Image (tube, rainbow, N blue to C red; front, side):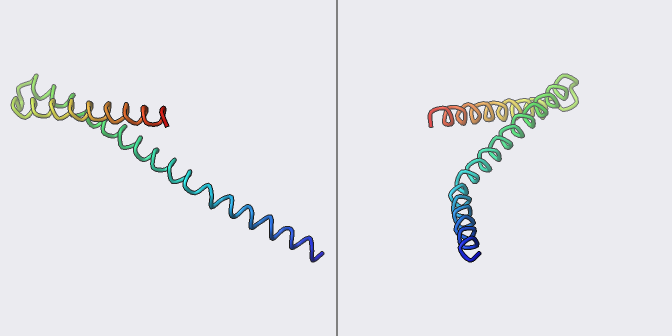
Length: 94
């Protein structure tokens, strides 16, 4: 009975050590998911800004502000596409 509990303790210790070894992989996965989420938010915000700016510009409600909003939206879309492409390239080649 004593030897059996000793084996279980060793198995639990090995299982614990294996879980600790997996932590860097988990942090990497969490970080990559967070970055992907931020890129998606950046793209969505850029699309919304571009649409709102185009509506402002087309209706003449705020002509100057509408143009600026369209440019801000396009810049955000470009940033998200570049960041996403860079992320895919890094993941592919590592």
